[in-house]
Amino acid sequence: MSLKVLPLAAALPALAHGRVRAYPWCSMLVLAYLAEGLVRATPDRGPGVPLALPETVLAAFAFTAILLYVRAARRRLRASPAGPGRACAAPPLPAAPGHSGHAASRAPRATR
Image 1 (cartoon, rainbow, N blue to C red):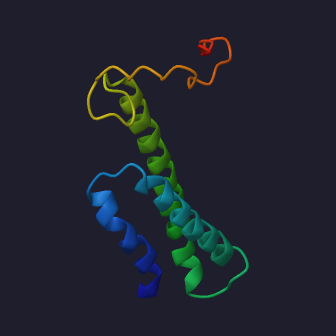
Image 2: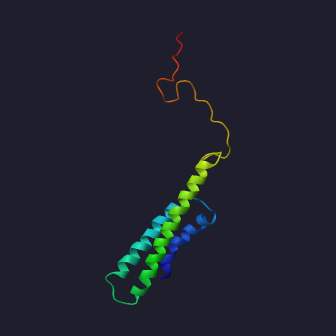
Image 3: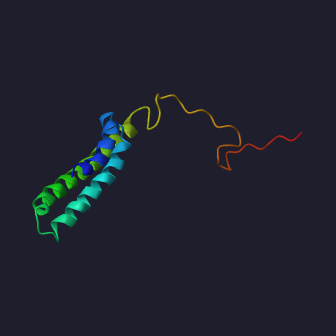
């Protein structure tokens, strides 16, 4: 029973540091617990059935909370002045002539 906690325990260091990229990974793990709870609750007749319902409810709650947190964190990053993935709000470097990717913006080459 305690071995089931190991995948979530592996995600704890990244979650504790607040790394947003770890949360979607953790949500995938939580879906496995949700599926297991649903499978155990339906056909079984035994001591695992009373524990399956709380497992399913907790996993559904954790999955929803993770999705809401990641959505809010991504909105905060997009709204920040620095923008996503930038450490500071420095202006972007100008593109080299002919390397911008747009055919209309390419300057004709001088021939010698």
